[in-house]
Length: 403
Ligand code: CS2
Ligand code: MG
Image 1 (cartoon, rainbow, N blue to C red):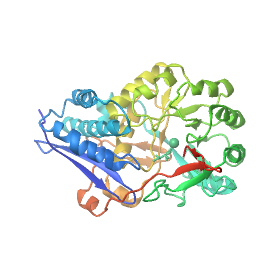
Image 2: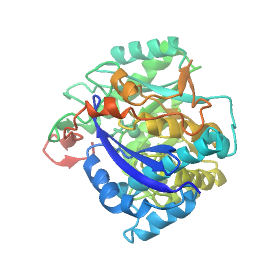
Image 3: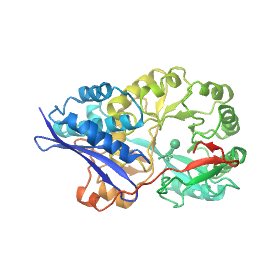
Image 4: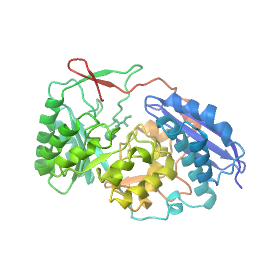
């Protein structure tokens, strides 16, 4: 049996902070797992180093499910983003090791390919509708078949999803949270105009997505969904905060616009009512924050019973290790919907050499044994961690709001 003899938490910041767990077996085989939780990285690093790694040494690396159950039930304080991100990192690294020892890419261990490649969506954004459409046209020419549209809101200095840099989006922008101001009615006016312009410019053979990012009440989301129906959105994401899963019933009563939710979910329990009551159409949970490949498979299998498809989160604050693991999962899962893709910077790609590739809006994890990704520890050493917080949002009267 491949015995775990070491596990190291590697914190590096090639343009943004990443936390990676590297597990080593007695035969020298290693595996990696993403443990990055944007804005709370050190909490997961400590959870792993202080409370998980000591429990791993000496265990059989093949016993992925037993280790998962040991860390989940053994925590006593179950679930939550920090715990489930730590468990995810261990789980992902063990799948990487199992693939390497079997000489197979992880998707083959998950039941083999269910499709030739993974359809991804990219992000077109701009301070104005024209800028956003120009970016979307560029992506359409590159062959992307699904494009997320996010544009600035007139009268607001900044808004979610509109990046300072045209190509690289990084929301964690300061050593203390920056504050942005929000105005719902201005937002509700501009998004239908954006989609109308997008359909006129891009036509109908491209999927158009939008991320509301938790900033509407259920009835406001119903209003926006109804306004966007003529433009056939592929999905409206995070339409309203999802702690109250029942809130989505109200949205469903008003619009047939497909709904996606779940990038901040960390276990099946966050999505159970949404899925079994068919209140959503896509589940956004992903490998790094929802307990790894092992738990994400459970969520997807449950979702499949209710015709809910996957739509894994894939922002730049999820490392190439998570992207690689997600692509192996995506290639195999029967009820695959779509995969988010935000390019990483060249310095990030250099720290995390990977086999996955992108061509014409489709990705493939590659056929290297395991996950086909690693961390270059020498390069990683050159990027010092620095605190970075996600922004906060206030209404114009100063009321704290969702960002
Ligand atoms: C966004 C993310 O990609 C998305 O759909 O919601 O960019 C999210 O804002 C970041 O991952 C937060 O760290
Ligand atoms: Mg989102």
